[in-house]
Image (cartoon, rainbow, N blue to C red; front, side, top):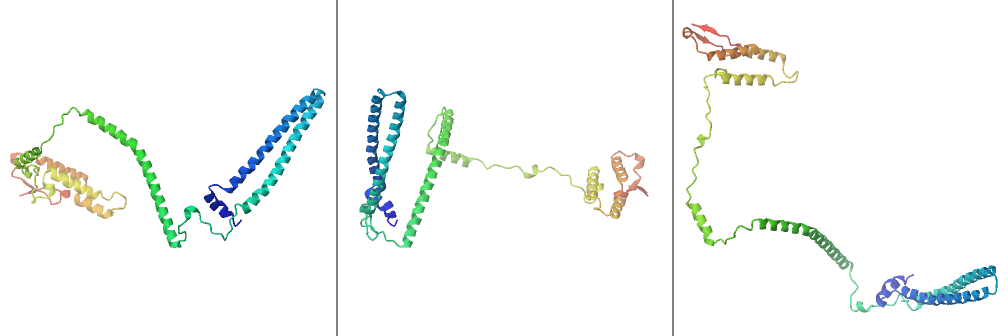
Length: 300
């Protein structure tokens, strides 16, 4: 068993073949004459049985054929047994004598002659790491090769599409551009006048400024509408129940007035736009500062 690693690695490397394969070929060559001998005996016995059948009846012929067949099988089995037994001894003797290498014998293969096979562990680890790196590079190159092969049909398709587009505009004559054309174009661009932009104030729409001396609800209908909407938005900020104190809500309603008062004030603003009679020009009306409680009273 101690010689098995040498038999499996060193001898096939030196001889160029495995010793066990040579022994198998020898045994097969020895078994071939046995099969030929059995075949000749079988032909002779069949011919003898046919000659004997002419002098005997049918029943005896069948018995003779069965005995011949069984005898030939036993004869072939007996020969194979003796050959196998003999060559088993031959195989063991050959492996223990002819193809045996003593453990204390230093054997150097011809292609290993002059090589230093004694390396330290660090150098061996470096060699293995370098070998693994080369394997990784090889795998990456193979992967890149597969990627390039897969991208080749796509590139060909794009090239054909680009060529077809180029052919569609091939009727346009191609004229060589002189170097002075670029200089002329640059001079023309420099000679153009500076673009004049219109006054930015012309783009700004006119906005009618309100009189700061007047309060928002005194700016006419538009000012009043804006003021009323802002107040309604402030009052409706607390949409959820309980968001606003009831007392605060009542105070706000008392301060700004209810919906009827607001609509009444809106009607009064609309009435101001109607021309007044001449006899009413001498009457001056004054409104309270709070439009929610706007009540007209006569002055003078």
